[in-house]
Image (cartoon, rainbow over all chains, first blue to last red; front, side, top):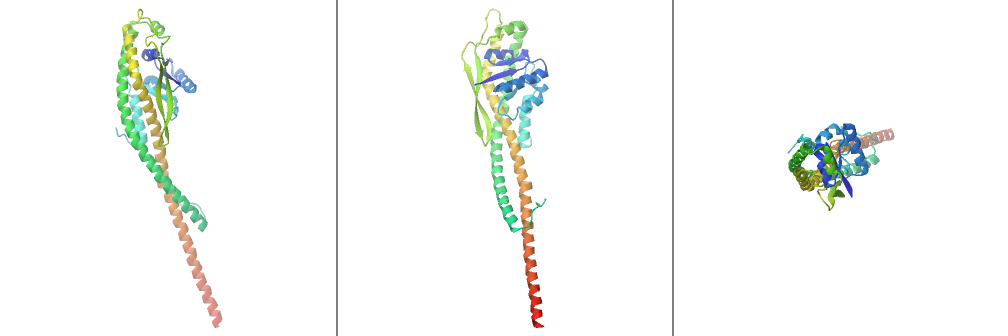
Length: 102
Length: 211
């Protein structure tokens, strides 16, 4: 069994702790990066990360894009959705098909 | 188109012919793979998009509840209330093969327990509400994770396949065809040269015999 982790600001993601997920609240991009890498090394299956934090470390996230695990999934934060998650879907469509058909 | 740098011999001709046959077959297979991947990808990506929109909305709702909690309770108290979760949640990942793309199949593994691991005296009711909502959305969140990873991996594979198809279609196959044509011309030319040479020699011999 693999763990499921949530990375984000405390305001948004602390409540996930009650569900039994591993919650991390790094204070700066460097720590976010380290936390992502540490999670991946540990064999965490899914990492949910808020769009705000994800936007600060795009290269790190991209690195895991084409690996089977971990699945890094963007979620909105308490401050609202930035649309990055949807933009990522559109990017995939464009990459696969050549133009955005959605 | 560039002609390959080979000697125009029969041997090379037959080697190139085999290569052309293989390239054409590979092209057809890859093209089929690309089409099928594309079909599956489009199915999935549509579902993915609507799922994401739904999940995001539900999450926002849970978060806004949690925000109220943050307003009513101090961060330390929240931290303390959630310090020892009563349940744990893991994920079992199996690998599924779709047109040679490995995509994950995820399944939550829950241990049953108390979802609200705190005393009700010192916490606000909004916290219960936020957690209940999160719990509700968690199953769909997993589905989203699985689907998004799958579409991502498929998008990558489709791109790769397309490059390979194009390379075969616009580079390898025309190059091979041109080289084969070139060798054939060259061999034919040689043959004609030999015939004329023989005829010439025959003429010379005939002339000498007469004189």
